[in-house]
Length: 199
Length: 179
Image (cartoon, rainbow over all chains, first blue to last red; front, side, top):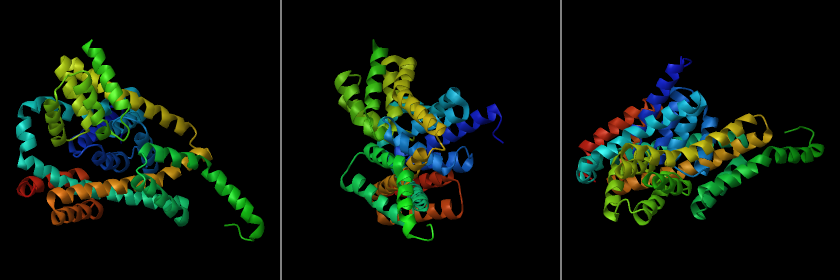
């Protein structure tokens, strides 16, 4: 399949071109499209790895989609792969930007263009919602229902109600995550003497 | 010195912009309009409006335009590189480090604990998108398009690219009379 060198570059170009050209509404709208190409269409990475990349991309400064494009390209084909992926992601719209400046008044005032953008937003909402569900399902599977729900609530309170910055929330969860398995093991060992069946 | 200013200006605007492209817009405004005076306020609003009407990441579109405006094609490449390269390298280095220690319980715990945060972040984004859609197209169009999109992508497994194109056509034909 994609084991040939040119095949890899071709896939990177086509996947990133598509996601760059179809991602309306800024960075977040591109995330589900990139996931679809990277996880489902080309199987470059699995969903877990996508989650890690997304979390770290969120925790670092700068545009998110381009960082993810760069990493996926790099993972596949090193520096040249990263260059191909980023350029195919950003150049079409960057060039359109320069070329279309003369018709800017028309474009941003056009009812049809505004209508087209409005039409895509619910689709983006659905894609993001599906991703939310799938990551939630994963979290419950890995952490168990009780701890999972506690952590959902904690994340929601921090992000939405207290308005703590994304990067800080991710850093906090990562910091706890580093000790998670150690803590789980300790708790289990402490429980063990009282229970005959190990849970 | 134009080329150097492009590098410094876009590097600063993006390296301080946490939370993706849109978060760096005010920082870019500060560098482009206030600091280096490459554009005036009105020009900046115009390119922002155009940028929002075009697909793809917003920060790179602005960088490309301003870079080109200041120093033609080399300027465009420099501004783009200053926007993208530093954070891309940081991500690559971090993920490489993570993969080296893939089997350690520390890394496993970290990648597990990231899942609930991502889920909640995506949920909040979903809500924001739905809210802005209800604001521009009204609740019935939003629900209708969302329902059809869900059915097409999740039940019929139609490629999202095709669903997005279909939404464009519907938006151009129907929603252009609504928004």
